[in-house]
Length: 159
Image 1: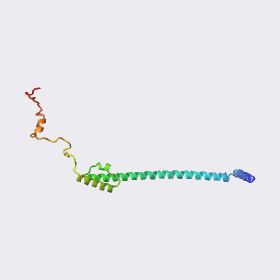
Image 2: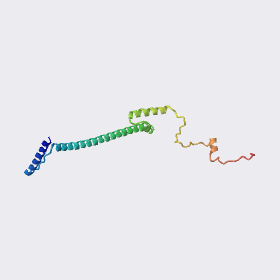
Image 3: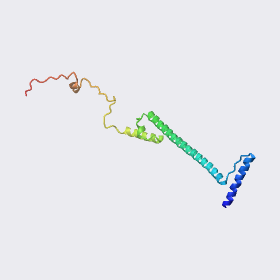
Image 4: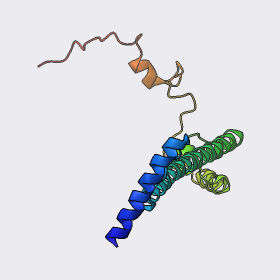
C-alpha cells in the first residue's frame, strides 16, 4: 500500500516535471491537498456566513428595540393628549402605566370620578395659598393689626 502511494507520488512528480518542460505550468494536487483546500474554503465560507448571521441578528434586535421604544413613546403621547383634553393632573402619566392607551383612559376616568365623589377633609384654598383679606370691622384683626400694635400698660396694677 505504501509502495503504491510512493509510485503515485513519483508519477505525479514526473508528470509535474514533464509539464514544466512542455511549458504548461499546471500544478497537480494529491487528494489530501485537495481535501485540505476544500476544507479551508468551506471553513472560510462558514465563518463568513456565521458573521453575517450574527450581524443580521444584531440588526433585528436593534430594530425590535427601536420599534418597542417608538410604540412606548406614541402610547405615552396619546395618554398625555388625553390628560390634557380632559383637564386631569399630568402626574397621572407617572402614576398609571401608559403602555396601553385604552387601559390608561379607563383608569384615569375612574380616578377622576372617585376624586369628584369624595370631598376633601381640609379646606381648599382657591387663591394659591395667599393670606385672605380681613375686613377692618373684625375685632381680632384689629387687635393684631399694626395700627393697634402700640402697647399701653395698665397703671393701677400693683406687684
